[in-house]
Length: 53
Image (spheres, rainbow, N blue to C red):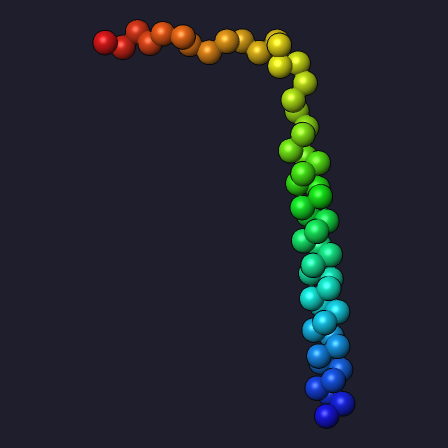
């Protein structure tokens, strides 16, 4: 019986570790989403008209 209790406690710890990792990854993803947006005014304009007819 004690083995089952220890296993359940281990699973609870693993679950909380997993939840913590997922939350950390979500924070990192949100932070990284805002990177690389500098100097948008220096971007060349795209094609306005196609020459294929």
